[in-house]
Length: 315
Image 1 (cartoon, rainbow, N blue to C red):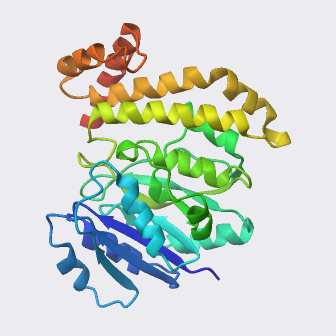
Image 2: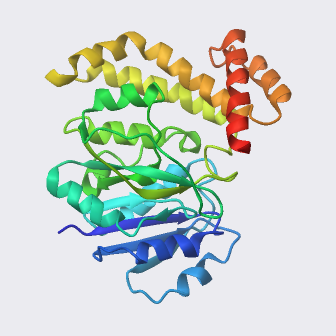
């Protein structure tokens, strides 16, 4: 049976004790917990030391490195991991007690893969259920995964993936993008490019949606720069990828539609930024439109979408 490394880069610390407790409460017991303190202003070490479980390993960064290059923290955790499989979770999220047991069953059913995935439950600050991420197929290949993700028919986070540790190391760790905006996507694409990915629709990961999550914070322009690099990666990947016989149609669809799909991602990024301060951010995007290959119509469409996102947030 596999050993897991559950890695927690600690930035905020507000929910860290609950996060650690959710890992220690797993029904599957063969795991280690790696807590990496990224110079958090909260008493992270004190919170970690309050647990006496010997499976917890605590580390500190000498300086904050996750503000922009969040993947540096993820990759340090991967380098420290001793388990055969590794997952990285936010310090304000939590695991269902059956998270590791569910992934173990998935690995038994689909042996030999480098990446496995689960559905997620989105919760609020108080831990109340808000919604589920979309369901997925039990198995899919990389082109299907890219196609559904870029059409925004999937919602995913770094923590609902479990990776074979050595596969992550061999590919250089998690793919680096500014603010890790899309890093979880591309990391999964690379890991499943040859063998595919298995998925469970049991929502064993709980993602806490709040104003401090990556989706809600960060420099909007840095996110748009990340989108440009995401598009460049996709173009290069499709140019060299040899599709499996079952993904020929979707592969050629991606080749034809990649520019449209990446424009859709840019619009979504602008919409997220315009949920608040809509007027000032509208003009910010207008000023930078040529830099990011945007048209006025793209910015207007994003502003309209932002209104709907803001209403959903307020509800």
